[in-house]
Length: 319
Image (tube, rainbow, N blue to C red; front, side, top):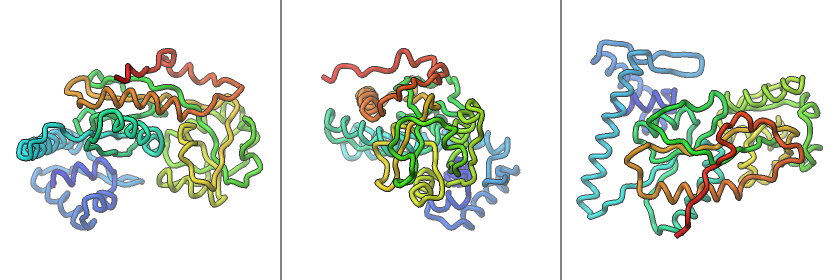
């Protein structure tokens, strides 16, 4: 029941938790209700987009997560001792756009450097990945400072990989596809689609600076759905520039003049680092530099929002 409750809190949805845990939604509901009866308090409340923990539920979630993490570590340690293995799997988190591009490339470089390694990749939004690094679920996460930004947490070491220019993704046959940088005014009357609040906030802020508004008339559940709506001609969208190298063939991109930007960061625990963390940080810096598209002729002014941009994380010696 504890693992079910923590999963529901993380995903914010009974149906999504049921799918991940391979349960029925009614079974998940029964487990949550049984836990509430056992504790004598309400743990979950519904809202417009799903469910979230009550104040009592959030307190319980933190303790439950710590207990589950320790239990998982105990199981791994026992299995490792039993088969003579000493290296635990490397668990990496990344936002969807980074999980689709630079992170797999960086892990490929890591494996070439260190040899075979048991690893896994868990996508999620930055706000979801940060607590999982704190809780010990993730050894490293690659996140962004797009709204609502990143918390200042003394338990976490944060390194700037670099600043990414957002670009506009269009259907392949769109008149603006493949052109030189365009002003947002030229696209203001288009229908836009967004899949998360952070990207929508960047788009609205950029349009407002130019004195126009962006018509975000469509919403997608995730990045794949967002790109599907673009490819089928229903909308255009704002996406990270580093995703350009991993896009499907039936869409194209166009850079913006003075584009919105976001900082790309790695976050790691301040202690008990996985042995492969340092070499992976090196490879992430290399992959980000390779994936980042050339800067537009009109240099973005948004880098002022990233105080660490003058000193990005640089890879160490490859030896």
